[in-house]
Image (cartoon, rainbow, N blue to C red):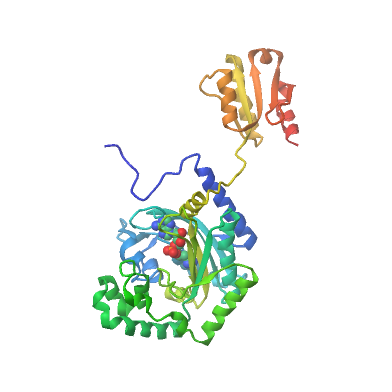
Length: 423
Ligand code: HAM
């Protein structure tokens, strides 16, 4: 049997990688406008980063991590998400001491989760994410949300729904937690074993259970919004006011809890409402994680961020039939006819490329017609034609493929003329 790609992963081939590059360039440009700077953390971390960061009652930690011992006996995990590593790096590099606060970071890279692959769910996927660390101003919550929505809108998507919730501060959460335990305890025997073990440890997780989601106690579970104290309520109100001021539409959903443990106050998801979209409609998720810093051994520092996978963004583009366009032309294709001209064309494309132009030639001894076809396929803006006759006369024909205009220039002036044509 031939060797195949691992389940839940994909090759991104030429023809598709251009779209990925385009999306990445859009993300980078957005981050430049919002002033988020790139951070690159390792693909693997000490497993502890995620045990303490993401939380040991989460699906990610319990079932989905690619963990192994390296040859030195250290517990290592391929990163399932980017927030805990960024916070680890923030502490390690003492970013809390940087002059500019909050520290606004973005990342773009592969994440790994051992999940059941299906449409929109991969075992290796690429996240674009941002983290704003060092501010507890609700305005930064609105900024992060605006950035996430801006990415989708900027790509041309329209069928979007932003759902927000507040998970409150520690005090509110403690009160809610007790209410949840009281609510589920009498009938916890009817729930799955995961939920049973979550009851005392982290009852909020029960609300996020995929197996028990239709149990009648789910719908009647006490809502966090009823347990928010005054501070948490005021914070959530302010976030909503900012969103309204920015004319960003949203819905409040008190059942939104998110699948990771570090959240408090603002939590949100962006869904695709496009009809053609598959069963998994969440495009992006994020929220505030005041307290995660201390959990990982750092000084008290608030933070908020989001992450979105490029795979789901592309699925949303497909569902809405949005076809982003970018310039994929090349500057010059050199067509050569005859042996000596062919040899000379090697030098010509080299000179063009050395001057910063994209240039291509034929490497399969193709006839003139096939070479013109190739130039067409590559979207060449100019085609330079060199036959043995031209070579003998020391000239070359340069054709502007858009206007059809053709000029003959001396071979020794070709590069200069070509540069002039660009001006
Ligand atoms: P998350 O909700 O686990 O949050 O993932 C965020 C996004 O990653 C999802 O909305 C989805 O777009 C994508 N994603 C997750 N799993 C998969 C998968 N198996 N296949 C394809 N895409 C997937 C986090 O990761 C948090 N770190 C987000 C965050 C940043 N919160 C605060 N800052």
